[in-house]
Length: 99
Image 1 (cartoon, rainbow, N blue to C red):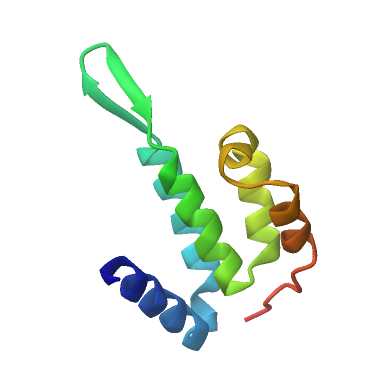
Image 2: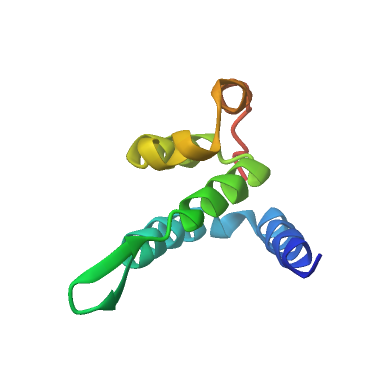
């Protein structure tokens, strides 16, 4: 429940501050680039793919179709693990939130 409240707060904040849309999208892409691969020893690492999934869900909830499709294209293999054709069709039918 706590994580849901954080997400609702983020969605509400960006929904009421549409002028921050481009900054937020840029920060999401930068964050994923920086933190997708987690190095936990000198020669071992893993991909923290759930951050991609959460970013997709956030962009989807905000209705940022263009950024959402860009993110999916960039991380298609990761997204295919979490989303199916029905989800992709729903994304295709989103009307871009110009906010």
